[in-house]
Picture 1 (cartoon, rainbow, N blue to C red):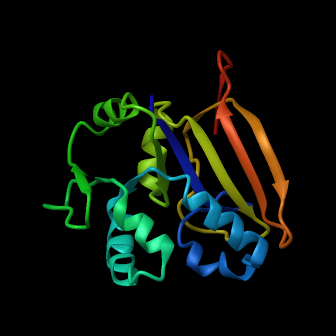
Picture 2 (picture 1 turned 135 degrees about the horizontal axis):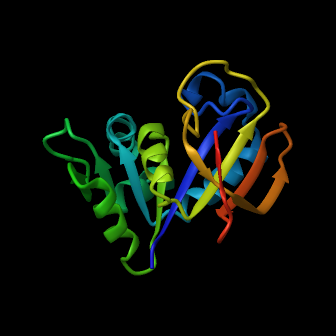
Length: 189
């Protein structure tokens, strides 16, 4: 069975939108290596339209035989959730236009892939609401952004989570992995 993994850069106040505005000062060799290693655990991407547009405009042009990240992202399956796109033209991309929850449940039943949501706050929150996230891989940054889409949208009933791993990286970024706790109550945000 596939696992739906939410991988996100998050500020201390829970913002995950526009990390390009606050994430980069916290990258050093250790954080970079961690991010690089995590990318190669991704067997498929699940993206909202905005993140898909950014990735589809970026990664194909960087695949020159010298960039293993670009080669990996260009090769793996991509599932794009959008009601506005008419086609997903990036190599090996598949468009999900309707019945998103049902289609993600079907995707989750497929054999063995790590299907990773990157960015895509609206999609992430929709799947969190439906209890379709199997793991949360969070890089929590020591910065308060103060505005933007949050990892957990206001009013969301959150599943209780169990901490699997926690590691403080050299720049103060905390690498956290959580899984939903079985049989525990939800907490209103």
